[in-house]
Image (cartoon, rainbow, N blue to C red; front, side, top):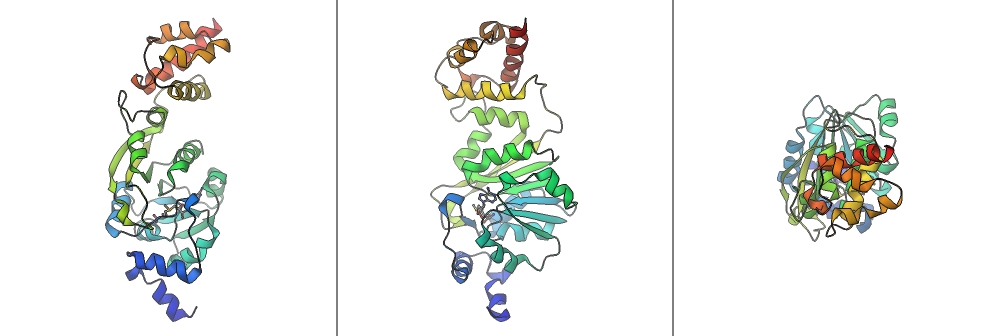
Length: 297
Ligand code: SAM
């Protein structure tokens, strides 16, 4: 490709249109992979909504997960001190370099984010991100959030663009239909809010569903102490696996493993007939701890 045609192809003035996505993919002979959720956000207002929701400023080092063709990255680079973008699809690297290669505050990493040891890799590069921005397929969203929270990197906040129904589950309150195990866990990780919706028409190719932007302000200190975090997660999973059942029945397997389930429910002040969706994160934390103390007695 001549310098002149590359300059035309990657002209930022053309960025915010489906035509740009089409032309650049065509020039690179790239056929998109559905499994990687490759729907690119080209709408300028929606992109600004995400950057504003994240509150990115000149002191921020931002970790972007799944930069795709670089639309959101371009906006982040204009505001942040530095952007580190981790993209799994090698075919998109020349596309990202074509558009963003001129930015000195840009680091591109080719990797599956779930395979990256974030604390080690970012520490080595001397770049500790303060914020995370990601527009990734919904089925890897929870694994990615878990990976970020458990990474040991003290991120201030994580801003995600995800399927609207999934976002509603993330922020759901106890007792509502959307309230599930992820809603409980989110309350343990941080404070989550819905920052707006993004219609399917803002993406190319156009997905079947609308998206929403959520921001999670991660807690610096856990909001509740836990004797055994793995048991807390497990109790939540078991309770919601059979969410229509009474809690005592959903957790029955714990009793067969030797846990003093009835005593723990009583000590935690939880009615054995209650259903999973009625309990708060704090209820689950009390129950997980009571399972340990009551069983040990
Ligand atoms: N951020 C771009 C945008 O807003 O247009 C692209 C979003 S597209 C929905 C999702 C991107 O995440 C794709 O580029 C895909 O290849 C990438 N991706 C999917 N799974 C990933 C993973 N595990 N690690 C890193 N990138 C991933």
